[in-house]
Length: 264
Image (cartoon, rainbow, N blue to C red; front, side, top):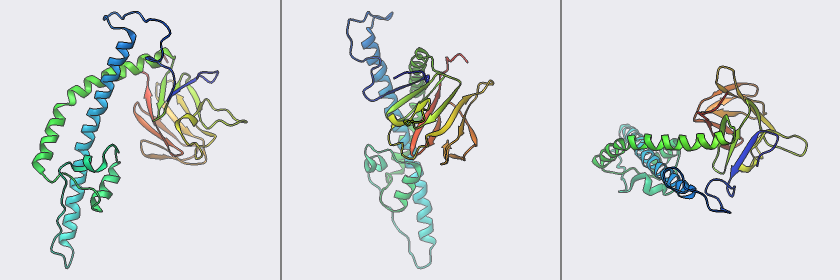
């Protein structure tokens, strides 16, 4: 939906490239139809997500193993103890969590509590690290494809940047835009309601500004603290929004993406 606010929201169920077609679409310059091109891009993005997950579990295993080693040293060094064995599972953390991607703190807590166990074979973990490292060039290539897809979509909407959540994307088309929770009596440029429960989001949560130098900033105007890249942003304070920064407000997490083709 796009109105006078200058922000466009797309989310689950929103029409976009690859949506219902009312008439045949001519082939692209490469001989693919628009729908075939969209399908190919979707496959590449799915491949990128799969590679990201693989890299994630390699890092998670390393964090879990370090936490396990520290815990083992503490137990062995404690008075009246003779040591404690921490068994692993062949599938490691990926097998334990399944489709859920835990945070680093969750991995540490679960490993120390014995709820989750890393893969027991150090050689196997080393092999996974080596295999993951070999896939980094492929990841970079797919990332370039993803950036190209995003920049084209953002440019077609006249967007300078975008806030991306799990359920919706909010395109920012002006150098200064307010974000928060719209009500009957107060309207903000970017209403975060499509992303999920906004009960803890202030009506006027903050402003996203593009300064003349080309940097984006978030200023917190709400009563509750916000976070940018894990750092608290108190009321009236501001923080730099870099490409890829994580903005957290009222229980919602949004990634900030800058359109590389923007015209300031």
